[in-house]
Length: 115
Length: 111
View 1 (cartoon, each protein chain N blue to C red):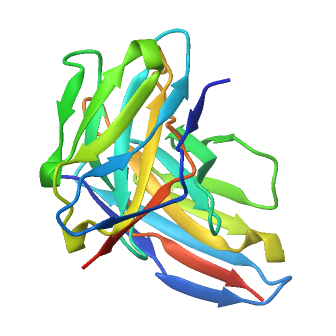
View 2: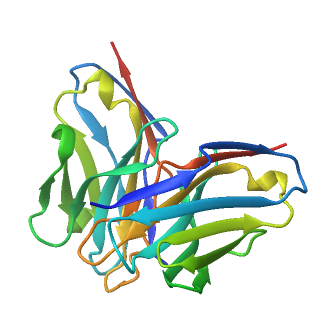
């Protein structure tokens, strides 16, 4: 079965520093991949998604992610962290050929931004 | 654009009491609807999935049930809540050529 692994349940960075949140998937066929953000007591908002077009995907709020098939990874980055980026981030995968859109989510990474 | 209304935002219920959480969708028709649960410190687990009125797929065995009495209404229920039912419940919606869109969630505490 497909799975998504997010390394690090908590990541702490200083304001202005690089943000790197890691995500690896298990699949022999590249799936569709997503990053979502969740602010406290709210639903999830889509940051970006990879659907087999360009391997470098740009999303909202200055985030981007790069699909690396050889590493089965889809890490999320942002060059300079802002206090408002503090939230929980989820990587998700949609298995190739799945028309039901039942995303499989990772366990999440909480991003803390220090002033 | 799509809008998901989910209520209540928070709920505290005693063990053994019934549960009804409601989700309604605006701005689309014939969507796929989903109930996810997010337990503390864990990711999102898909509980139920529906492609149409009266069509419900249960993804994991549990104490909960779901119903879809109307095209844009999705209800999560339980006859008797357990402590382990505590969590953050999210309704989600997907329509053709759209993204998976989430409601604002219900924080359920079973005491």
